[in-house]
Image 1 (cartoon, helix red, strand yellow):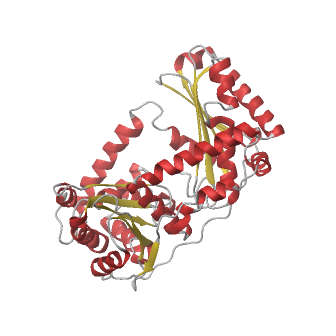
Image 2: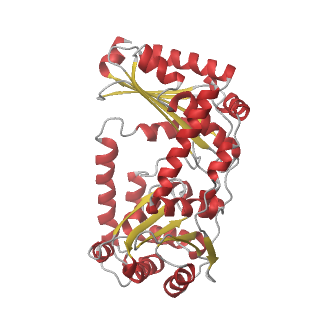
Image 3: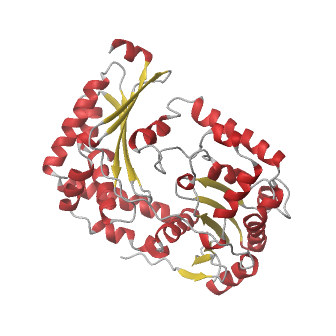
Length: 427
C-alpha cells in the first residue's frame, strides 16, 4: 500500500518555501525550519561558522532576550532544539496547538533580526561554549575525533566535506563580528529556507500564519554556488592509524558513494546494508559469530548532496584479535560479495530493514517534519517521503552488484584505524 501523507506547498513572495502536512492525531504542531547552510558552505579560514550560528540563534535577537526562546516555549509545554550538519542547519520545536503563533513569532524575530543581538560579548561567549562542546564531545572521549579523521582521509583537501561541522577553533578565534554578520546575511535568507509544519493544522490556516509572521522577513539578494561534480571512487587505498587511549581497536572503513537523490545512491545503501549492516550479513556472520574476532560490525550510508556521499563500516576488534587479520578477512568477504552480488535473502532482508527504519521515522511527527524539510530543501521534493520505499523496491540485485563493483571495491577503501597502545606495540 503506497504512503499518502498529505503534502501542501506554497512559496511566499519573499521566497520562503512553506510545506504543510496535516496530522490531527494529537493536538500538537511541529515547526521545522531548514536553512541551506552547513559546514560545506564555509570557506578556508572560516570554518565552524554554520555551527556557531546554531548556538547564536538561541542567544537573543531584536525583541527576544538571550535564552528566552527556550524558556518561552518550554514553559508552555514545548520542546525544541537545533542541529548543524554538512548540508544544512535545522531548527525545530513541537508545541501545543495554541502556542503556534508564539513559535512563529519567535522564529521571525531570530531569522530576520538576529544580528541586532550579535555583539562582541555575545560572540565571545558562544565561542567559549563551542570550545567546551568540542572538548566534551570530540577531544576527551574515545574515538571522539574518528569522524573528523575519516572525512579528512576520504575527501580531498579543500573539498566541502573535508572538515567537520565543529570547525576549527583557530578560525572561530580569528572571526570578527563583521565576519559573523556577513555569514548570516549571506545565508539566512527567506529564499534559502524551508518552513515545514506537521500536526494539527489545516493547510489554509498554516499558510496564513506563515505569511503573517514570516512573510514580512526581508528578502535579500544572494546566490549559492553550484554543487561540486561527483567525486570518483578512490583509486588506491588511503590509510590513517591513530594510537591512543581507546577501549579496543576499531577499524573505520569508508568509501565514497554517489550523491544522495540518485538511484545509484539507493543501490549503494542497500549494498552496504546487505554486506555488513544486518545481523545476518556475511561480514557479521564471519567476524562476529563464527571467528569471533570482532565484537560488532556497523554499516551505513550517509547521503550528501555536494558531489559525493559516504559509506562507512565500523568494526570493533575483539580483545586479542589482530586488526590486520580482520582487515584481510574484510577484503576477502567484500571480494566475494562483489563477485556474486547479494543473495536473494540478503536483498530481501536489506529491503525489509530499510522499510522498517523508514516507517519508524515517519511514525514520529518530529522526524516526519524533518524529512519533509530535508527533501524539500535539498532536492525540491517535499513529497519524497511518500515515494522513497517505491524507489527502494525498484532497485534490483543487478543494480546493487553494478554499483558495488564501482564504488565498494577494496582498492577504493579508506581505513582509519584507532589502535590501543598495546596493539600498536605488538604489531
